[in-house]
Amino acid sequence: MSQVAHRRVTAGMFDGVPVMGGNIPELGARPARRGGQARNMVATTPGESAVRKKLDAHQVTEHLRKLPHWRHATERSAIVREFVFADFRQAFSFMTQVALQAERHDHHPEWANVYNRVNITWATHEAGGVTEDDFRLATCCDEAYERFALVPNAKG
Image (cartoon, rainbow, N blue to C red):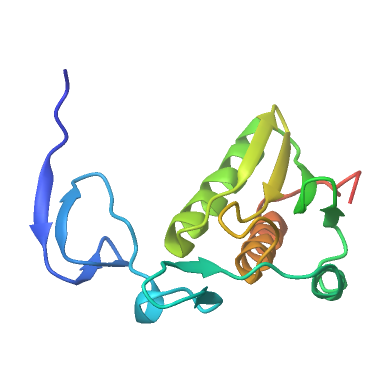
């Protein structure tokens, strides 16, 4: 059984990522939310935990106008996109950049990779649909794609 070394830290920075105090694994840390909560989180009633706010269909459509390569998968209330790269190395480099952003935002994708293709789905399970966080990370994906893709995306 392997052991993960832990280091006691106070609130501040750990490897360039803001963290809350406590014991954290030596290999990484959970980032602290700005102001204790993400910007689009709302508490429904006193004493209830905060949840991310689901966007309605009109709001999703408005956001998608700014991200034309993404589509609304209405059957599961998510946004999806396929990214195509020249090879596996580009695809994996892209996934690494997205993973780092996802961890910074404490919001993670559903994704699949087969050689030079990466399919990403963003949805906020605790909200039961698409939230601002999903669009924020979709934008991060598009920005990372611009840095790593050498071939045009055949499917958009």
